[in-house]
Length: 317
Image (cartoon, rainbow, N blue to C red; front, side, top):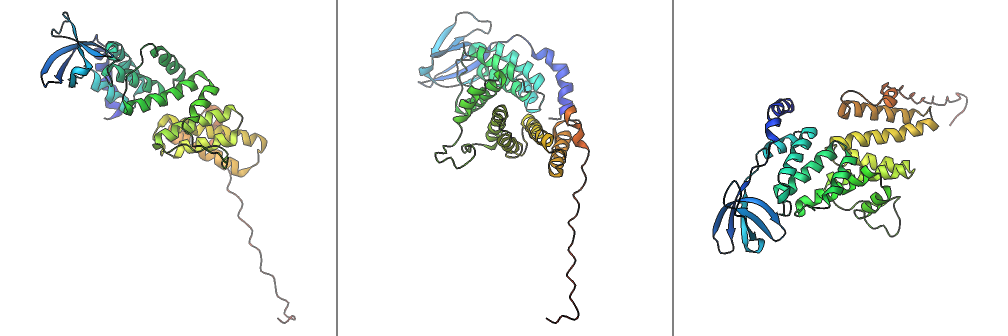
């Protein structure tokens, strides 16, 4: 969906989307093949709480073990929230999914329910904005009512935990977290272990997190390798990781230039990184401390061609 159009649409629909939740209709096929059409009031680990009346009342619980399959009505505003997230408007997606998460929190015990998924999208919206401290607080709060997610969505949740450690600046916990995704390097052949075989987007995120950790450990060379990987391994598909990894590389190069201010190679690298950030991630600007690198450094002097040795005409070969 076109981003300006989506923004204009949200300005009209957002107030309506943030409404009190209506009970969702559900169609259930039980183990005997019988169909029950009802409304969902909530869920518990062992069953779904239902009512036959949209307004509630006379509730009963159908045990999960008696259910062959079910289909729950999509909540009002769900499609808008998902379109807002996929369209990159993470600030409004945060608001929409926060409301949906509150509206359907009683469904959280039901695996991959709208309650659990709304909270997951809310966490992802915080991550995409770099609100890692807020993410850490929100995920800690959620421990009282753990999300129920299948393997597909749980992979996202596990990644979010790493960002929460970043938000807390708990570098020891982040180090432990990263070790779970690294290959064993018993012979210590590499400066640091490679990551396991995972989707490029996961490797980009983990590389960026490890780059932050290496920076905190005063290991700039390794941090630079990780940031460079985060920039390239997934072709910059995550705007936030692309932007922050570029700035991470810039910080490393800037530090090197403090020690070698006349190093033309470092200046050219800093210029390339600054222009990359400006044109791809920075909306035409760079942080003030890096504006000096937007000026193109001089080209390296061409190598001098050696004149062929003149042969003495009186000297015979």
